[in-house]
Length: 431
Image 1 (cartoon, rainbow, N blue to C red):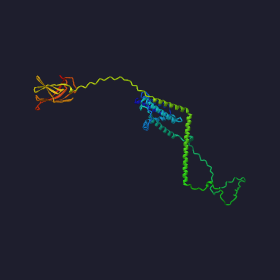
Image 2: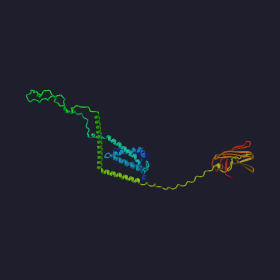
Image 3: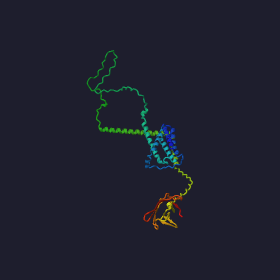
Image 4: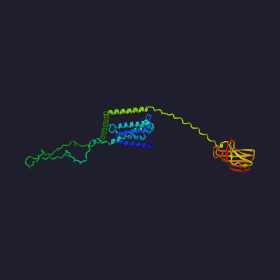
């Protein structure tokens, strides 16, 4: 798959994910289907039976698997999408976890069937997927808990801001202090003549005596509370508050369990169908994973034609047997220089009418690139020295091409130079 196609597919999946977070059910299913089809599309839909590893991971493998941050983030996002889709269900957390785990298993099977991604499916690859969805579940649970309003806020209907009402007068009975006689109530209006004042009746006894007001029960003499008694009372109050808090938590848990049980009983048909579907999918996945992988089909290809053996290397000119003739045959001491031989034995040849003298070279160094010869002709008293190079190192069949360029020097026994010149030599096969 080309890089442009991968980018287009990723953009489409991101678009479906954003639409899914808006609560669209069709975008959710389209995202799942296209995400699973991404793997066979990379392999041009060439599928085979997967061979998955079913070994339980060890602690070291778990730690290593948790470093796969890409899959942790991907399946955390997919759990968020599933959590949005099950917003009307009672147990939305459980359903979102089951959906995410099912899609993670299908992704591993798709990778094993198409040999893409990591190449094969392994049970330990579900560890980062499970870590991502559990982390997302925890974060979303905390977020929903923080956004949930208390019960008293949900029950009381908010009212518009109005002017504050005047405080109603409270009817409190004023108790007079001790030793003070309250004044008598005003007399009722007289039914006699108008304008006639009738004095109130006098008390029966004007003698001094105790106050008619009795002390109240709560006016008993107070005493100072000991510090130890206050500390013990505070500990008891704290203990009672903790017990009440624990009882409230236990009551909430009991209420949640009862609500969950009532939801299961009310939707028992849906629960049974969901459990059956999960069991069926798990059984199918186990059967598929247990099937042996098919043997690869080996097509016998025709044997390639035998290549001709490489040609043997061409012989070197320095190794070729034959003789070399100079382009200019010169004469020294009544003898004519006619040829030079390198193989099988290095030598030089002189001739005179009716006689041919062949002189061997005691000092001879022959390499693929150069030649050094020193030959002594004792009967005549001359020394022949030849220093030359091969222009082409391989043997040539051309008779008109020089194969050796050499400097020929001939001296007598006293060291006087009798002849010195550079000569091209032509090679000939042995006679």
